[in-house]
Amino acid sequence: MDFGFTPEQEQLRVQVRRLLDKEMPLDRILAWSANPAALDRVLWKRTAALGWPGITVPEAYGGLGLGCEDLIVVLEEMGRSLAPLPLLATDAAVAALRALGTEAQQAAHLPAIAAGDVVATLAVLEESDILAPEAIATRASTKAGDVLLDGAKLFVPDAQDADLILVAAREGQGVSLFLVPADAPGVRVTPLVVVDPTKPAAEVRLDGVRLPEAARLGTPGVRGRPSRVCSIA
Image (cartoon, rainbow, N blue to C red):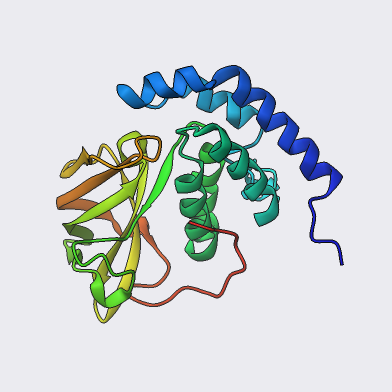
């Protein structure tokens, strides 16, 4: 049995390496690490033209429709270059959208993510630092037909550059995920000091963030349908 990469995946590796060698040489990474700046949106759009943000997005929504192994090829080369690009955070959000989102929700968000117009991330961890439903204290409540979110998320990857944050919040007897625009009233994103500046993270506070019911992924407080969507976040 052959556990190696396919010729197509090796071609993808060469493509990724070529762009990173040109756009993110070590001296640029060192300078960026000493003085971290916002995401280079022009560069992110260039990666989108090569299909990176949409690598696991279905072709019907403008992505490449590839799998975990192909994503790993890109991530390996990014790790080799220490490239501070939000690909892993974005893929985690894509996985959640594919697993829980309705067709309308996927159609509304996946094409923009694949095109590089929207950076997305997934906000789960809180003060307890336990990755389990019972550790989530952020709460969702309903008011006049809308949903209100209150709480705080820690170590949200690439949140300072995100346009869309998928927030896990306690609702009823379970946990739901909500599509939260990063610029929504009541959302406050504070970059955190981390050991590796090429893997930025932030605290996300939600103070009475009002969302429509359509912002919820899946059924309130109920686990979504089983999925084989790739995510290695």
